Length: 139
Image 1 (cartoon, one colour):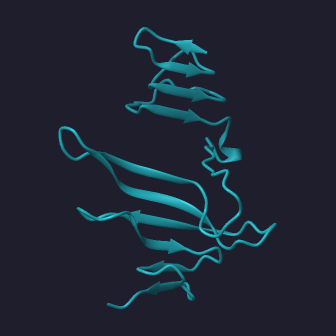
Image 2 (tube, rainbow, N blue to C red):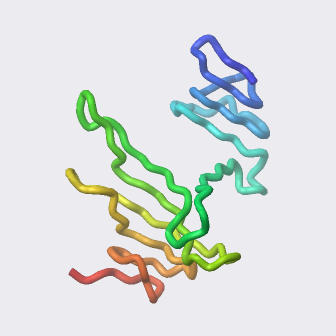
């Protein structure tokens, strides 16, 4: 582990390029990075860098990991503007089928799911239960 003069932390690298830089493989030192966190996987054969985001809740429908994205909206406030969520399809024990949901929010509102990719690959826009390959809610 390396902590440089700017207090950036590197794990698996001595050339720290971000606030947190985790490298499991060859560190591409020629790349131009301006991120707070950087993850480099061992090789592309294994799909590159992988980050697992999961909940440890009891099994239940719609529970799963999510990544919220946001920032400041005033000098004192910040909020999540959008979210990507992986949710469990059902609450049946031993089943792990899941969906991917994309959420955004309007000013004064809450994060709302607008696009869902169902476990069978069907995509719903404005709905959470698409029954065909691409389905758009009316209205």
